[in-house]
Length: 401
Image (cartoon, rainbow, N blue to C red; front, top):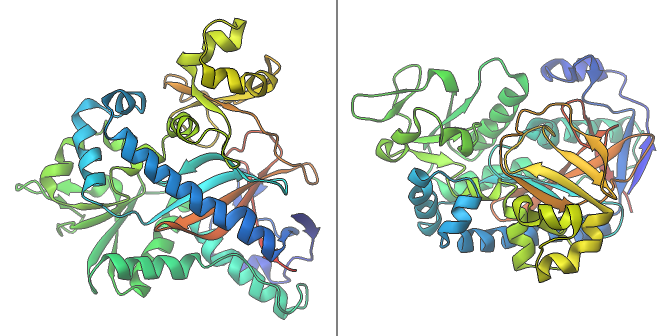
């Protein structure tokens, strides 16, 4: 992996006309003054294949968690919704997509976390960076034959064909007024239309209930299948949570994804697959706080990871967004601390710290996109900070060699 300075497109601003959040918070979000270059071999063997394997491991972890009430509790699943989560898994409710965040410096990619429920940056990954690639090849900035790991849109369209009969009506919902969320929902709906589905957008806030207990959109149409850019952990605490089962609606993503998008899956994965080259040691904070602080307690599993965790570890809430409430410690001292503490009240996990590589003062995180059960594309965000936050930049990539 290399970061290469490139000439931006002459009509970049014109190209961004439909990209309504290309700049955010006074900073560029989309930045094509440089791009990351990969070889085909490292894409296939260091990113694509490991991400696919990691997704399979997450599915194995789900199968274990739904059989263990203690683990369901540690995952923060409210008792009244545990049957919903377990039933969705046992009935083979199919997944559509997710995004793994990976640390990668040319060696083994390391799983940082997995947003398997409501990942954003779909539009810029699947569509805008592909257009950038085609434009830059045509302009001679990139060589003929340059490629991109990006079959995301096509894979999503095919996934909808696999899961639903032709002309199935699917509702796509996101919070009103959020340009990034709307772009993600529209990109997903575009793939659904290409897959032969009917696609209808609705604001989350306008979804209601019929007298019969079915979900309705703003035009009082019954919602039979709903793609919701709204995390399950929030739905479980929402006033409509109790209506999920009686409504009869089918959800994308299914309820069992609440276990995969949850950072509490990280210590479960480490316990099940200790030493896997694409995992970092991870534990529930309550189990190891004393051992980290003064050496008291611990377990044989912890003892084998003690040196790595003492050298550096990250404390993460099991639910959090945009780097909120995350702390990085090195040799027992704070190295970097999130200023946004919105998720401090949630239970936390501890994960061994692996520094991100630094290119021109920025630290990239790779987003490996899973469609169905297979890795289908790559998006990259970079940040000046060690904790990737809402001021991160999206960077295009290409394959050469």
